[in-house]
Length: 131
Length: 131
Image (cartoon, rainbow over all chains, first blue to last red; front, side, top):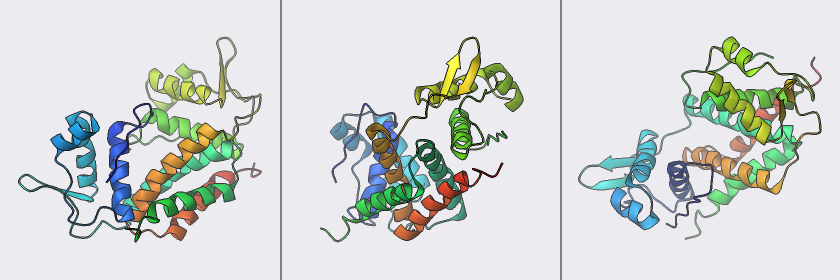
């Protein structure tokens, strides 16, 4: 899987890394049980700090998307992905609300905003089956 | 305008404050030229640090949603809100993409995600005219 980090971005590197791994799982490029590189290896490959990779892996472990084993290493959750819980939905709505407010204040219409949402979702999913 | 901050949230307080002010402008509750409380006053009212309010005001000033005058204080941008720039659109898509990936990995369907986006946008806008 190809990971690209933007060092100029306002988004913290660990968030960018976690987002891209999440996309990889959503698109099916990373499959349940697939091994991920060790923290040290990925940090070296990306030229970033060990702690940054560790933080991203831990975040995804907490969310139930990864399993971290001391011996066998880091793998994509093999026991079923987490579902849409109430807590997830509440958080998603809060975050969408923040983006919707920024869009609305700049005069982006409701339909355009909804269309953008649809189109980014489709972009991610499009890789499924395209392997 | 009623502002409610969640001290338990993962979202930084200055982000929550900036989001709610943005919503206030988007909904029309805050109008161009409207005065906002001084940093000191708002910090006292909300029981938060001066720096937190300052950071939120500065963020919105940078985005062009507020004007900060040394003498007359902080007001909602009276000279036209910023539009949908290429930079804004790129940032919006990046952020939406992160949310879409998290939703997709949990099995939330494209239509549901788009519908959520539409519904939060409508929630914000619904206050317009309802004054």
